[in-house]
Amino acid sequence: QVQLVESGGGLVQAGGSLRLSCAASGRTFSRYAMGWFRQAPGKERDVVAAISWSGVSTYYADSVKGRFTISRDNAKNTVYLQMNSLKPEDTAVYYCAADLSGMPHRNQHEYDYWGQGTQVTVSS
Image 1 (cartoon, rainbow, N blue to C red):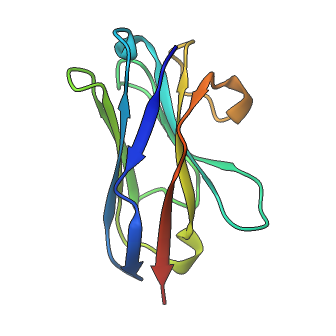
Image 2 (image 1 turned 120 degrees about the vertical axis):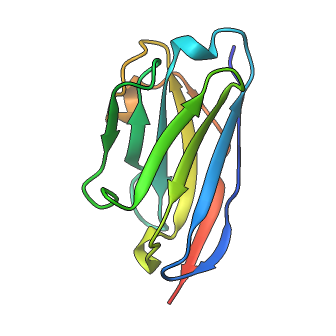
Image 3 (image 1 turned 30 degrees about the horizontal axis):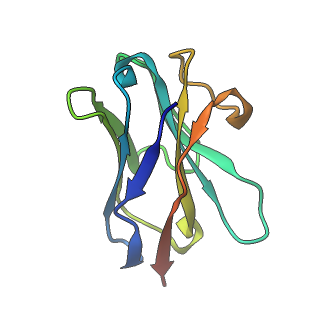
């Protein structure tokens, strides 16, 4: 069993930055791929970024390329999402997820464990 706890969300003005963190329990964190997803009101949950177990491979949605960076610290059992140049359309609940395959999948159905989410609100 893996427990994931997100933090770092909040209210920020357009153009600002936030860094989300996702702390994972368990001894095998370094084997999991990790993903960040988001869900805006009335919309489906979509992938934002994903990172392989080693950190070598990453994936970004087109809408966040060049603005967001996913990273991980396996010694701290934590994955991060640095979000820069935030836009109002980035407003959503952000979730982290763990994929036991170790590969950075885009499809949310590939992920085995989910956090509870953290709200990010970007004002114009």
